[in-house]
Amino acid sequence: MRLTRLALTNFKSFQDTQVIDLAPVTLLFGPNSVGKSSVLMALAYVQQILKKGHCNPQKLDALGDKAIGGFRSLVNGSDLNKTIKIRLDYEVGNTPFDDYQNNFAEVSEFSQDIYLLLEDFGGSIETGAVELEIAWSYQKQDAYVKSYRTWVNQRYVGCITSNEDQRNTVINELNLLHPLLIPYNHEDWLFRYYGDHRPFDELEDDEPLTELEGLLISYNPFRSSHIDPANTVLAGECFNNKIPPILIACQSGAIPKLGSKIVTSLEYSDSDRGENYLTYLVIEQQLSQAFILPLDKLLEELEKSILIGPLRVMPDSDYISNPNPEQSDWVTGRAAWDLLSKNPNHNDVSKKLIHKTSHWFSSTDKLNTGYEVVNQSLADSLNLPQIEGQDLAFQLNKRHLLFKEKRSDLLLPVNQLGTGISQVLPIVVAANHDKVSLICVEQPELHIHPRLQVELADLFLENRDKHTFLIETHSEHLILRLLKRIRQTTDKELDEDKEPLTPDDISVTYLDDSSGEVVAKRIAIDEDGEFTQHWPKGFFAERREELM
Image: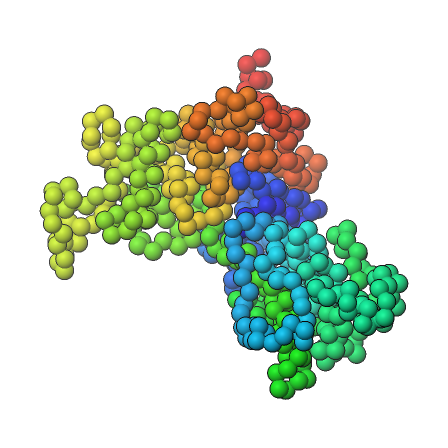
């Protein structure tokens, strides 16, 4: 799964809806305090809502318990009458969208002629989107998810809404004409039910569009509260929404309980587990895959994402590593040092990570810092066998991360080197770590020489197939290397060891506040590695002005 777009409305400095396209490598530019960090914060906020149901958090776990001040500080203008909307678009890629399997295997024991036949919803998802609308409840003096909408394969699926008291959460919109919600035998059903094949627009308001609609109404104990059958238009798509609201169990306003099949108010009448029961299981499965599965997969993706902050730790010689670093440990870069400090003799993952990191630091065609990264203990340096169960053994076997100067073979701790080494190491480790997906970095260029900044661009490019990079930066050097690689690809001048790069692989977004409101502008790049439009307010023009 890969996130492809983030849309923010009334979130922090973003008032009108602003869209940030997420390519394999995305760069965010803009003046200080314009809202670049808010983009990263929005992802952590969604994760906290899905994982813990916290819509009014004082701190965000994924950002290392960063204090944010709750919903009032997150909503634009601190206006509690506004609602925050956050939409995330995604591509499935190689991520399996499995079903929930609860009792569903029983269906295979029966003839397909006696139950509803629907597409495998989860297995058919290629792209999708979810949108959360978060509001303030004056009744409860707390924030809650007012509505949750979902799209699959570029088509709107439906909406779950919650009242302010959060006691009435319902599926109140369902696009019954979505291709994945139309039964296989729809044409045959139309002929059996109506005696002809009348098109949808010729049906009466009280006639079901599909067999699924008729069943949803018949299984719904609240079918007397039938909604207005008029067509509804949302996000540019017209759909006929005729079902009565379906009550569901929720965990935070309009967010259904995650991790398992959906729990609804739908009822089937057949006590011997016959046709009605099997059809009920099919509908339950379809609704689970339509509304819960995208959120489950999104939460998995966000939990594998990391944010590396602008000020990264420089461990001293007494640094004690955490054997089980967490997502929040990446903010200061500590997680990188913890991963490299594990015993490589006991952990193949650590050995591989140390090797890749050392290669990036030492290789002449990469960062070329003049240092190799070495993980060793005092026992290793003295060629002593490992001793267990003693205090002395702990000191002898304690792992140390050292940097070996290639010219002299001298081993040095990081606090005896320049600050830039400690600042760049967490970024290198994250890019080479297979267990993370989305990597967000704030100002990777801080304390780093311009030569290393351009090489960081190649680090992102080399690993863009397994990670998505979201970089908040002011570095002109990063962008110059990316443009160069596009130009070399077009001119067929790229080195054999470099992957071709096209403009679609890069998204450069400038956040502009010159009008008084923050506007996200994607700066297009052509195949010659040139921007097709000027930077707002002459950004990056300082060098030219100083030379004139």
